[in-house]
Length: 197
Image (cartoon, rainbow, N blue to C red):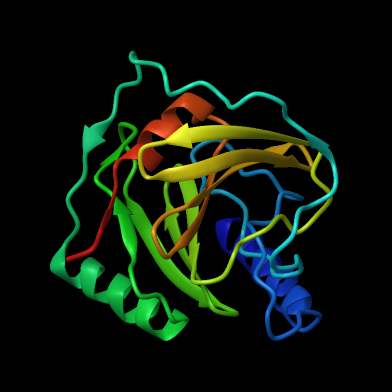
């Protein structure tokens, strides 16, 4: 069953990839929200770079993550770090980031690359990193700006799936949580992003 879902996700990503132009980078596909315990949507090229997307813009910046969010430290094996840095180099990233804390029971599951976007699939969220701006693949239903210590960000909801977009020093990051991870938890994870050494 899991292989079937990945096959569908990969076929959707490949079909959308063929429609992309050279300078486009897209966010995770919100059309198929993940089931509980599964990673976020597959990488689905098809958006555009730069500019703003359609949809309602949120007014005031979002609140900082709640203080009662519980995260646990995560360690990455040398092989995982090497895979991430190698993939990041291929994607053209000068700096690659990994969260230093995650929600309980979460861990890195898979590293992928599509159209210049590196995707890190964790058990409870999907994280994309690119040297170019990552924008939603569909029309935004809502946007809410947030201030984070790692950079300015915004929550964008497309097709009922919310994704946190953050611009760090020289890397664009998009984090899509599964349904069992809250926005506060996702923002708290984003606050722990550190460059891979």
